[in-house]
Image 1 (cartoon, rainbow, N blue to C red):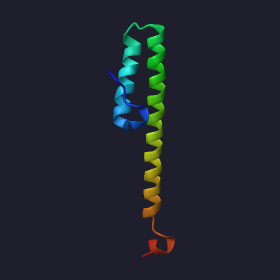
Image 2 (image 1 turned 90 degrees about the horizontal axis):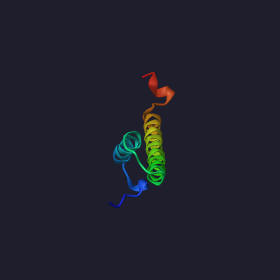
Image 3 (image 1 turned 30 degrees about the vertical axis):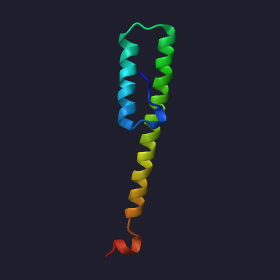
Image 4 (image 1 turned 90 degrees about the vertical axis):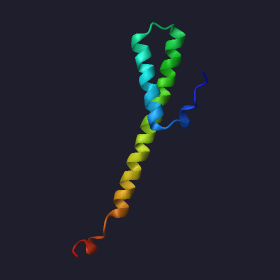
Length: 76
């Protein structure tokens, strides 16, 4: 199965795959090479999720700033 590049995944897809990886690392007995490969993919997925969350937070902050009224209009 060919994996989708991490940078093309949505937050939900990246998080779901990250959960699967964590479960495999906790439950299965894997070779060192398999474990390292999964760990590397997990790190990339974690970074992707963090980046997407940061972008979403910045968008929310921007929307809040855009919707704030100037001080002189707040008294009306």
